[in-house]
Each structure stands twice: as C-alpha cells, then as structure tokens.
Amino acid sequence: MTRNGIIALVAGVAVAIAAGIWISDLVISKVETRQAQDNGAARVGGPFTLVNEQGETVTEADFRGRYMLIYFGFTFCPDVCPTELQVISSAIEALGPRGADIAPVFITIDPERDTPEVMARYVALFHPRLTGLTGTPEQIAATAKAWHVFYRKAEDESSSADYTMDHSSIVFLMGPEGEYLKLFAPGTSPDKMAEDIAAVM
Image (tube, rainbow, N blue to C red; front, side, top):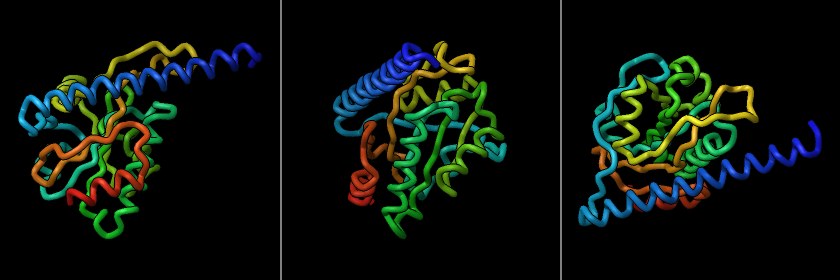
C-alpha cells in the first residue's frame, strides 16, 4: 500500500470511530431525556424474540433472575465491537463470584451476515457465557428500537466486505426483572463498569 493509501486508511478509521462516538452520544442523550420524562424510569428495553448461536429461540424471559449486560454490534466490526465485548468480559471477571449473576449478551445489527453459526464462532472469542443473538431483520429492528439503538448499512470501500454498519456503541445494564438500570458509554473501563454494576447488585 502506498503512503497516501495508508494515510487515507488511517483517516477513514478515525472518522468511523469518531462517528460511532458521536452517534453513541446522541443515543445516550435520547435515553437520558426519556428517563427524565418518565420520572426516573427510563423506557429502555422490552420483550424480544431472537435466535441464539445454537439456533434456539430466545426471549427476554430466558434471562429473568439475572442481570444482563447487552451490547448491539456486528461480527465484521473491526475495532469498536471487539473492544466493548472485551470490556464486558473483563468487568464480569473483575466482579469475582458475583460475576456469575451477570448474563452478557451480544445482539447483532447485521443479521444478513451474522447467522447463528457465525455468532457461535465469534462469541466464543470473548467470554464462555456470552450469548450471541440474531434473527430476522424485522426482529432485530424491533429489538434495537426498544433499546433506542441506532444502526444503518454503509458502503465500505476500504474493505473486501460489501458493506459495514454504522451504529451506536453503548452497553446496557438490565436488572433481574428486565428493568433498565444503567448505560455505559464508549471508553468506560472494565474496573469502572464492574464498580458501577456492584453498586446496584
């Protein structure tokens, strides 16, 4: 690759990361505004029906009794998604025995490519209890809407893949009854995430 090509690639990655952070800030602002409007009870989350990495139908009821750390992303994501999933995994480990009460969940926003088989290979790279969820485009859209998650398909001229996905990058903490508790913005450290989770457990 030429020097100009390398510069263009680095600039492209920087723009993508900046766009992801900007989108996340918009979503965080929207969630916080909705929380204020609802007198402290944010309307985040809700019923869903998706498919796990084993090809089994999963609903929100399957996670009752456990806290959930939910992240929306896609397996072809080059940097942000794997970084956030690693933060989630490290935070759970930092909680020690209490980490067993946390169900980490990765929901794809790219169901076209993220089949159960692809998700199975991907989630195994991060945490042994990480559940990967996919579904039809309609199911994913409905679930993302319930969590106020932004995503859209975008061209990716710098990659051999046909497209990439622009999306907000937020980790959601949900309570044992499926209630929204907290969100974690991009850049939250594993120790800070673990500390904040421990404070509400």
